[in-house]
Image 1 (cartoon, rainbow, N blue to C red):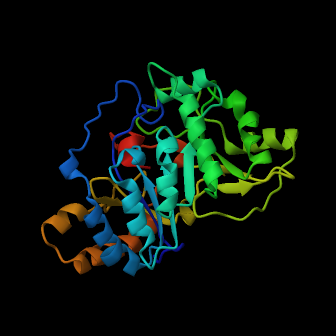
Image 2: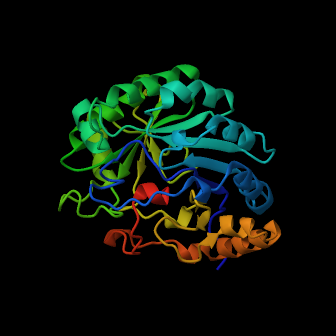
Length: 331
């Protein structure tokens, strides 16, 4: 079956480590076997794969993720090198924001303009509880990073909110209101049980339509906003400078419009977040001297199979047996 959507977007996990331990990402008690530095895909290896494998196949949009990508040494230099590739149409980054205040200017100067920052709560106590941080609060430093990114001119500046019933769902209108006075884009993400299905008991997840209705009841909600690069359905509160988006992987399957593949920190290419079928170990191939053209052929074959590999049974949660946390997957 030919692809039903153009796949031109590569999510690149730069590191499997994180300085937070968010409960929905790395549940307490989870076994975390971090990669050795030598096992990570190195900068030159990544650039070679982009030039010789992915760009010739039509990939032009790249998102850098983790773990926490701001822990990657010399990150701004890597971003500058990716941004300098003639085929690069878009480069973005997803971060928890804790180190952003110190690094934002260097990232901006390197050519990064699009950034997603996790902000699951406006309440410091709730935020720190979800983030699994101990000792001093992390909320204020994350908030400072968001402010600095805004002042530098990052646009779009997106705030990612994982919605967890009984934990932060009472704050949804306050979070949505952040889009009114500034051109911030608040994205509500349905909680996905990956390695954490027992974490919040039987509270499950909050459907995006329920959140949209709450916003409609308070302010109204304009539909039909422009679709972005990712899976979010985007709306706008009337008169707001920013937008509100909804990533509804549990209630509203969007596999038919998936436009991405995922490259893990150790060089494994996966066609689907929830399905490892057909994955390719590109790093080992490079280090064993396989011609990048042959690796490109393998990726091209996987691209053709992707519509059948996409995992479509959202209603049953994730039953693929990953045995990994979201942080390790780099989702």
